Structure formats: structure tokens, C-alpha cells
Amino acid sequence: MNTPKITRPKFPPGYADKPKSEVSWNYVVQRLTESKNYWFCSTRPNGRPHVVPRWAVYLDEKIYYDGSPETRHARNIAANPHVTVHLESGNEAVILEGTCHPAGKPDPELAQRLSAVYRAKYGPEGYAPKPDQWEEGGLYVFTPRQCITWTVFFENPTKFVFDEEG
Image (cartoon, rainbow, N blue to C red; front, side):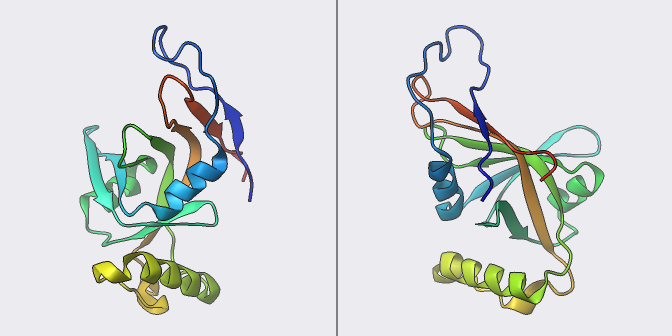
């Protein structure tokens, strides 16, 4: 696992002037792994924002999700792959910026792992894709560039920056 570089987010004066601690990357990984709903924010070709909740899995330092290439979100990222992902809590925030792309047909080992993680996470909700689910496409991958997070806004706002090369 590559631990991203840790810094502080920049806020206007009066927001979080004297943070006391930092959020650990392990905490962020746990939230990304356990969360059921992820909000994906993309931009329409005309510049208007678009946001949609998605089921997804965090695996190998990326977020994988699936869906039809005909959805508004898929058409948006085809034109502009820059996306923000936010988990549901605003009090214990995890906000990622990065890029989304069609993942293509995953190799058999990745397909097995994705299927297993999806089944464990969403099987009780009625969604349990098999490893061949994505052979014809429909799998997307989000690669984070940075993450802003906090568990108590005034005490521990933390920014993680990922290696642009990796």
C-alpha cells in the first residue's frame, strides 16, 4: 500500500485555525472499504454539475463501480474524467478528487476479487455480481489524486496527496 503524503487543507481564516491532530490514512481506508454509498460528482459537457450515489468497492487503492455506459455519469466522464467522490457523512468527511475511466475487461484474478468484495458488501442488498459480469464492459475505476478528511472539523482536518505517477 502506498501511503499518500499528508498535509493540511487550506481554509479561510476562522475555519480550522489551530488543528490539534490528524486523521490517519488507515481510518480513511476503513471508511472507503466499509461505506455502502459513494457520491460521485462529475460535470456535464455544458459545464453543469451532476451528482449520483453509487454502490462501489475500494480495492487496490482505487474505487471500482459499475453501470451502463448510457448513464449521464458515464457520458460525463467520457467527456471529462475529473470527478469528486464523497462519502455520506458531512461530520466525518472523506472527500476525494481524482479521475474516472472505464476499467475495461478485468483480468480473471481482479474479476474474482471484485466479485467477492461486491458479494460480501452488497449481497444482503440483493446485488452479487459474478466474475464475468464485466466481460463486455460497464466497470469503471476511480483513481484518487487527493483526499480531504476530518472526524472533527476544527480539530483534525487532514489532506492526503497521492503520487501523480502511481
